[in-house]
Length: 330
Ligand code: COA
Image (cartoon, rainbow, N blue to C red; front, side, top):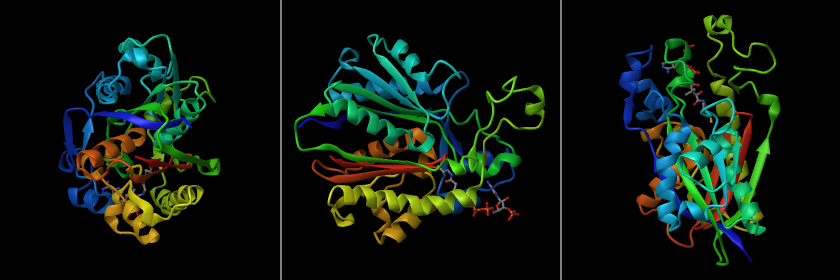
C-alpha cells in the first residue's frame, strides 16, 4: 500500500527580530500584556520587497536537501498562504519560476491557519493514488505588511509574524506517513477573522476612501475566536484518534497551529494531558498562519522530541472558521 510521508522539511524566517518592546514603541501595548495573553516574545518581519514566495525559496531548498532529491524530482507544488505575493497569479507559480522547477502544476490554497493541514490532505490524495511521487508543500506568510501597527490594530497585530515552512511529501511503501486527514469549515463565522479588502464585490476593489477609513486591515473578534478554538482543537484531535483506533496515550506529540499559547494550554487542559504534549514555539515566531505547523514540526524535530514510529497529531483552527487535523506515523 502506498502512503504519503514527509520526506524532508525546511524552514526560513526573516532575519529581522521584532520584540514586544519594539511594538510597544509603535502602539499602546506592553511586553507584559502580550506575553501573558499570548505567550509571544518575538516574531520575525520580512524586509520591504520580500513576499511569501521569497521566504519559501530558501525553506524549499532545505526541504529538498533533507529529502535527498532535487527540483527535477518534484511533480507538483502546493502553496498554502493567506498573504499571497499578489492578488493574481498565486505564489506557487512564483516558486516554480524562482527555483526553476519543470512546468509542473502549482496550486495555491487559501485556508489561512489550516492551510498546511489542508495542503497535507491534498498531497496525501495525489500520492496515495499514485498520481505523483514527490510534492512540495509550502506554508509561507508575510503578515507584517497586512497588519495595522498602530493602537487601533493592536489586538491583532501583536499576534502575527512572518515565516515559511516547507515539506516534501513523498510516496513510500513502508508502514509510516499520513494516516488520515480531517477537514472542517463553518462559514457562518467568516467575519470573526476577516480581511475584507480588496474585494471583488465592489469597484474599485480598494478605494482611497477605504484607506482613509482604515478598512484595509484585518479585523478579529478575539474572544469569539478563542471560544471556538478551544472546542474545535480537542474535537478534531479526537476525530483523528478515533479514525485510527488510537487514544491520546498513543500520541508522542501534538504539533498544533501556533495560534496562542493560552489556546494550546487550554486544549491540553481539556484533553487532560500534560501541557508539554502540545508543542509550542510561539514565543519565537508568533502566529505565522499557514507556516506555523511546519515551523513547529521542524523545531520539535531539532529538539529531539520526535523519533521514527511516533504518532503525531497536527491540528489547526483559524479564519473561516476552518479547522482540521492530520494524524501522522513518523
Ligand atoms: N495591548 C494592550 N491591550 C490590549 C491589546 C494589546 N495588544 N489588545 C487588546 N487590548 C485591550 C483591549 O482593548 C481591552 O481593553 P478594555 O478592557 O479597556 O476594553 C483589554 O485589552 C482586554 O481585551 P480582550 O479582547 O478582552 O483581551 P483577551 O484577554 O480576550 O485577549 C486576545 C485578547 C486577542 C489575546 C485573545 O482574545 C485571543 O487570544 N483570542 C484568540 C485570537 C487568535 O488566536 N487568533 C488567531 C486564530 S488562528
